[in-house]
Length: 343
Length: 147
Image 1 (cartoon, rainbow over the protein chains, first blue to last red):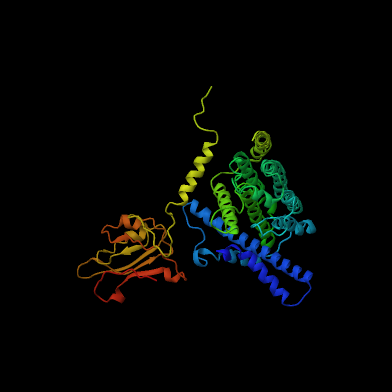
Image 2: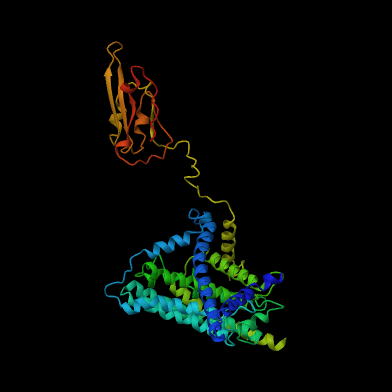
């Protein structure tokens, strides 16, 4: 049992010893271990994004009483590889009058900050890249950076539909930043710290979803809007404005946006598990297994919501953001404050 | 004042419950080609021809809107009746309207149930359903030639 519990630590130790065997200086050995860790996180992101796409198609299929991908590989598991190979083979189109630099940079501005969020996510007590004491602030601020990427994509495409899509995307994303942050403030007040591992430690006895259920619902709604998923998927309206800001993107550039969306889903689910579902706390199983199980549960909830509800109009969506979620989250903070004072 | 009998937002929960239930119900997909679909009784697919009953009247050829049927016959000198020599069904032109089946006086045409009819050449879609040369002098019930 001990072995399974300490498996990630044992792997990290083994890698460090392997580098030590070369007789290099401690700094270089540390650097190489960190590099291996970084590559590991990137591999995790790539595979999770690919298999989330497969999972989404399967979940969508089952909800719609049909099978998802079935034929490529056992249970259709190699479908993602087939899709990636197809996308790699596509022609790289840049519209003639498009702003080439901005057009090329936009996918990276959307994707890179989302990947950078993995620096502060604790997979378990010992498995965190950088345990910042303002981890939550880092997390929320970097998830806001990708908004500018969507505006860049919409503007540089030299296409009125893309521009409209980009503007709508920016409106939506900055609207829902506010309730996202406010809903987490209640948790921070109870835990007394912005460090993500401290917040998980504070949930040893009771998961914060219980005292902060209202905040959890606000977070769920705001996170669905932040990732641009149905019912808030106006960003890529699909049936309305072709693909919104991504209309002119083809092949791997579009795939990068797509990967960014699914990576953002993963990070948002991680944050929900850390803040509301008790992180790595749980009986019997090793902590990192609990963490992954909770993340998978949150992802399934997001997918369930996606394939149930129809899309909101832009005015309905902004109404909900400004007029419903912000007051509710402020009331939640107020009640949390009273609760902390009284109890 | 209207009394609201349901909790605000209960519609959302009903929707979620329905989709969750749907996720565990049997699938409606027919896994063709591993599983063949169940065709209805009155499904109208490729024509089947009984040469024994055919009196070579040519009604089917005349009534067909796409000119998919063609009939060659001769008059038997002894019985003075027409006898079919060759019956060709051009499946590529057929629109499966069923006029030939409806109008045949001896009911020698009927709709079959073969729907897997794709082929690699247009010529192979022109099917000779009965040919006196092949079967010899005796009339035999023709069998639908499959690809």
